[in-house]
Image 1 (cartoon, one colour):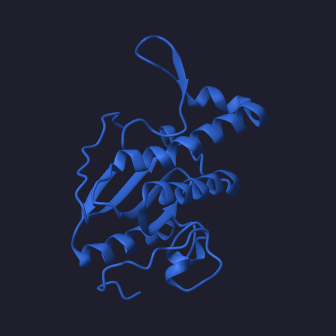
Image 2 (cartoon, one colour):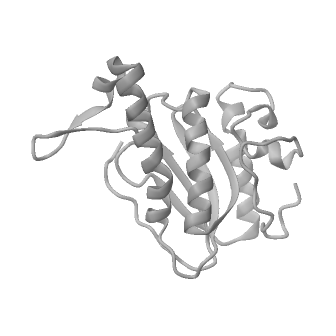
Length: 187
Protein backbone atom coordinates (compact mmCIF):
# COMPACT_ATOMS: atom_id res chain seq x y z
CA UNK A 1 0.00 0.00 0.00
CA UNK A 2 1.19 3.46 -0.80
CA UNK A 3 1.87 5.91 1.98
CA UNK A 4 1.02 8.78 -0.35
CA UNK A 5 -1.68 11.06 0.96
CA UNK A 6 -4.86 11.01 -1.05
CA UNK A 7 -6.08 14.17 -2.70
CA UNK A 8 -9.00 15.68 -0.82
CA UNK A 9 -11.63 17.92 -2.35
CA UNK A 10 -13.50 19.72 0.42
CA UNK A 11 -16.51 20.90 -1.58
CA UNK A 12 -19.57 22.21 0.30
CA UNK A 13 -22.59 19.93 -0.05
CA UNK A 14 -20.59 16.88 -1.14
CA UNK A 15 -20.76 13.61 0.71
CA UNK A 16 -17.53 11.61 1.10
CA UNK A 17 -17.03 7.90 0.73
CA UNK A 18 -14.04 7.17 2.98
CA UNK A 19 -12.07 3.97 3.37
CA UNK A 20 -9.09 3.56 5.67
CA UNK A 21 -7.15 0.50 6.79
CA UNK A 22 -5.34 -0.78 9.83
CA UNK A 23 -1.57 -0.86 9.65
CA UNK A 24 -0.40 -3.57 7.23
CA UNK A 25 -4.07 -4.59 7.01
CA UNK A 26 -3.72 -6.39 10.33
CA UNK A 27 -7.10 -7.40 11.86
CA UNK A 28 -6.84 -4.80 14.61
CA UNK A 29 -10.61 -4.18 14.52
CA UNK A 30 -11.57 -7.80 15.07
CA UNK A 31 -12.42 -7.33 18.75
CA UNK A 32 -15.50 -5.61 20.16
CA UNK A 33 -13.17 -3.54 22.32
CA UNK A 34 -11.38 -1.86 19.39
CA UNK A 35 -14.60 -1.54 17.38
CA UNK A 36 -16.16 0.16 20.41
CA UNK A 37 -13.30 2.66 20.53
CA UNK A 38 -13.91 3.40 16.87
CA UNK A 39 -17.67 3.86 17.38
CA UNK A 40 -16.97 6.29 20.23
CA UNK A 41 -14.43 8.20 18.13
CA UNK A 42 -16.83 8.51 15.19
CA UNK A 43 -19.55 9.79 17.52
CA UNK A 44 -17.24 12.37 19.10
CA UNK A 45 -15.91 13.44 15.69
CA UNK A 46 -19.45 13.75 14.33
CA UNK A 47 -20.29 16.30 17.05
CA UNK A 48 -16.99 18.18 16.95
CA UNK A 49 -16.45 18.25 13.17
CA UNK A 50 -20.18 18.54 12.37
CA UNK A 51 -20.99 15.89 9.80
CA UNK A 52 -23.94 13.68 8.99
CA UNK A 53 -23.19 9.97 8.99
CA UNK A 54 -25.07 8.11 6.25
CA UNK A 55 -23.42 4.67 6.30
CA UNK A 56 -20.58 2.72 7.85
CA UNK A 57 -19.11 -0.73 8.22
CA UNK A 58 -16.27 -1.77 10.50
CA UNK A 59 -14.42 -4.74 9.06
CA UNK A 60 -11.61 -6.58 10.91
CA UNK A 61 -8.87 -4.62 9.11
CA UNK A 62 -10.56 -1.63 7.47
CA UNK A 63 -13.44 0.83 7.73
CA UNK A 64 -15.88 2.35 5.25
CA UNK A 65 -17.76 5.56 6.03
CA UNK A 66 -20.19 7.67 4.05
CA UNK A 67 -20.55 11.09 5.57
CA UNK A 68 -21.56 14.59 4.58
CA UNK A 69 -20.02 17.61 6.33
CA UNK A 70 -22.65 20.09 7.48
CA UNK A 71 -20.59 23.28 7.35
CA UNK A 72 -19.60 24.92 4.08
CA UNK A 73 -15.99 25.12 5.25
CA UNK A 74 -14.55 21.78 6.38
CA UNK A 75 -11.50 19.57 6.06
CA UNK A 76 -11.99 15.81 5.52
CA UNK A 77 -8.41 15.20 6.63
CA UNK A 78 -9.24 16.81 9.97
CA UNK A 79 -12.39 14.70 10.29
CA UNK A 80 -10.34 11.54 9.73
CA UNK A 81 -7.73 12.73 12.23
CA UNK A 82 -10.49 13.18 14.83
CA UNK A 83 -11.67 9.61 14.20
CA UNK A 84 -8.38 7.76 13.78
CA UNK A 85 -6.09 9.42 16.31
CA UNK A 86 -7.95 8.52 19.53
CA UNK A 87 -8.48 4.93 18.38
CA UNK A 88 -4.80 4.50 17.61
CA UNK A 89 -3.75 5.97 20.93
CA UNK A 90 -6.21 3.85 22.92
CA UNK A 91 -5.22 0.67 21.08
CA UNK A 92 -1.47 1.20 21.45
CA UNK A 93 -1.92 1.97 25.14
CA UNK A 94 -4.02 -1.17 25.60
CA UNK A 95 -1.44 -3.32 23.80
CA UNK A 96 1.41 -1.90 25.87
CA UNK A 97 -0.33 -3.20 28.99
CA UNK A 98 -2.13 -6.36 27.82
CA UNK A 99 -0.38 -7.65 24.69
CA UNK A 100 3.11 -6.15 24.31
CA UNK A 101 4.07 -8.97 21.93
CA UNK A 102 1.89 -7.23 19.30
CA UNK A 103 3.85 -3.97 19.45
CA UNK A 104 6.70 -5.15 17.22
CA UNK A 105 4.16 -5.76 14.44
CA UNK A 106 3.00 -2.15 14.72
CA UNK A 107 6.44 -0.54 14.90
CA UNK A 108 7.96 1.13 11.88
CA UNK A 109 11.07 3.20 11.25
CA UNK A 110 10.79 6.89 10.44
CA UNK A 111 13.06 8.56 7.89
CA UNK A 112 15.10 10.13 10.72
CA UNK A 113 15.91 6.70 12.18
CA UNK A 114 13.50 6.85 15.10
CA UNK A 115 10.59 4.46 15.35
CA UNK A 116 6.88 4.86 15.83
CA UNK A 117 3.91 2.61 16.42
CA UNK A 118 1.05 2.66 13.98
CA UNK A 119 -2.52 1.45 14.33
CA UNK A 120 -3.60 2.87 10.95
CA UNK A 121 -2.00 2.49 7.55
CA UNK A 122 -0.06 5.61 6.56
CA UNK A 123 -1.67 7.96 4.08
CA UNK A 124 -5.18 9.24 3.86
CA UNK A 125 -6.91 6.15 2.59
CA UNK A 126 -9.60 6.40 -0.06
CA UNK A 127 -11.79 9.51 -0.39
CA UNK A 128 -14.37 9.94 -3.13
CA UNK A 129 -16.73 12.89 -3.34
CA UNK A 130 -20.34 11.88 -3.91
CA UNK A 131 -22.74 14.39 -5.43
CA UNK A 132 -25.39 12.29 -7.20
CA UNK A 133 -28.24 10.85 -5.10
CA UNK A 134 -28.21 7.61 -7.11
CA UNK A 135 -24.52 7.19 -6.31
CA UNK A 136 -25.33 7.56 -2.61
CA UNK A 137 -27.52 4.46 -2.76
CA UNK A 138 -24.88 2.45 -4.65
CA UNK A 139 -22.21 3.43 -2.10
CA UNK A 140 -24.44 2.50 0.85
CA UNK A 141 -25.19 -0.88 -0.72
CA UNK A 142 -21.47 -1.44 -1.42
CA UNK A 143 -20.57 -0.57 2.17
CA UNK A 144 -23.25 -2.84 3.62
CA UNK A 145 -22.32 -5.80 1.45
CA UNK A 146 -18.69 -5.89 2.64
CA UNK A 147 -19.23 -8.51 5.39
CA UNK A 148 -21.37 -10.63 3.03
CA UNK A 149 -18.75 -10.58 0.26
CA UNK A 150 -16.16 -11.56 2.87
CA UNK A 151 -18.27 -14.50 4.06
CA UNK A 152 -18.60 -13.14 7.61
CA UNK A 153 -22.43 -13.13 7.50
CA UNK A 154 -25.18 -14.19 5.11
CA UNK A 155 -27.13 -10.91 5.16
CA UNK A 156 -25.77 -7.36 5.63
CA UNK A 157 -28.00 -6.71 8.64
CA UNK A 158 -26.47 -9.71 10.43
CA UNK A 159 -23.20 -7.76 10.84
CA UNK A 160 -23.48 -5.87 14.11
CA UNK A 161 -20.81 -3.33 13.14
CA UNK A 162 -22.66 -1.82 10.19
CA UNK A 163 -25.34 0.77 9.53
CA UNK A 164 -27.19 -1.92 7.59
CA UNK A 165 -28.94 -2.77 10.85
CA UNK A 166 -30.21 0.81 11.12
CA UNK A 167 -31.60 0.68 7.57
CA UNK A 168 -33.25 -2.68 8.35
CA UNK A 169 -34.88 -1.06 11.41
CA UNK A 170 -33.04 -3.37 13.83
CA UNK A 171 -32.38 -1.73 17.18
CA UNK A 172 -30.29 -1.06 19.12
CA UNK A 173 -27.52 -0.03 16.73
CA UNK A 174 -23.91 0.88 17.43
CA UNK A 175 -24.27 4.25 15.70
CA UNK A 176 -27.41 6.07 14.68
CA UNK A 177 -27.57 7.28 11.09
CA UNK A 178 -28.51 10.87 10.34
CA UNK A 179 -31.84 11.10 8.50
CA UNK A 180 -30.59 13.67 5.98
CA UNK A 181 -30.12 11.37 3.00
CA UNK A 182 -31.16 12.54 -0.45
CA UNK A 183 -34.74 11.44 -1.24
CA UNK A 184 -33.58 8.85 -3.82
CA UNK A 185 -32.56 6.48 -1.03
CA UNK A 186 -35.73 4.62 -0.11
CA UNK A 187 -34.33 1.78 1.97
